[in-house]
Length: 397
Image (cartoon, rainbow, N blue to C red):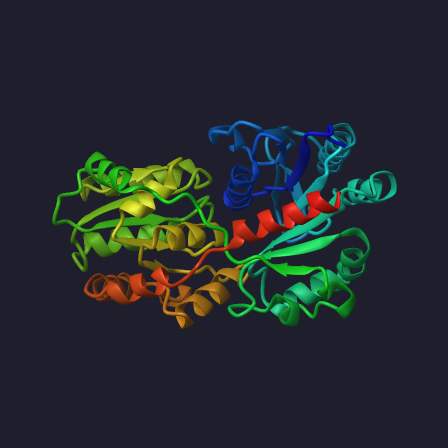
């Protein structure tokens, strides 16, 4: 394991699609790093190199995979048989663990990794590094209860959670969504569960917000609307509807900025950018400092993925969520739960029309205060809790 004066953390983030996993992993890594802590991230994200990595944090890139169907994957970049690509990934993960000898192995979201690729590493750690803590980190909501329960029974996850993991961290609040109850987690595993609370993001300072508004030519009395669809692979419909609403004159106030996400197909991005230019709306494929963009906005429109919600809550910016309902219902369940807390408003996917979108935006911009008040009282304690658990691990040794 690490030298006597260092503590090594290895984080696995499978990253088959989107920005969610790498953004969550980067947020955790950035907060845990210190002079005596090394953080090494195993990631399949094709854009990991676009992020600036702080001191004592680095990454190992494993070949990217992309989901074709619910259980089928193909290699993202290299033309290679999927099974060969998975073998390479499995080998890199295990070799990295053997060489790095982590004191803590943190697995993001997938209990066994993509196609069980983390299983050999978990078994090796249990056998040869019994003092290494193994932790599964889950977002607040994975999917609807029936889907998760069936998937975990099918993959024998319940037994392996009991046998191979020291703890399970759920990055949410039990009072908002009780994953223990919803996912029928057995008594033998319950005692390993820690609800950490939501993960805070860096908060943009006033100077940065003012600078961002100036950069995008937002007038002093103008309202700034940011539309973001995370990675963007399935965000075209939201942006298309937003632009149609503007083109039809249903809503034309303020200054709007669209951030499509780097995974939206280029042809779609170009189509949206061309329409946006006529309306003086700027489209960006990627923005590295989203905390500044969201902090500068008066209203954010998004699909409500876990990481975007944490950004929104950290910056305390009112938001309208348009959650996708396929292939998972996670965004819809989260939007409903957060609306119940009066933190956000949401528009169901099947009700997304230019008229309804314009009505929601007008209604919210006319009365932003209730959302801001609710967010002011909402604490994001996730990192504090993780640091406390880390301290306990280090003390126990």
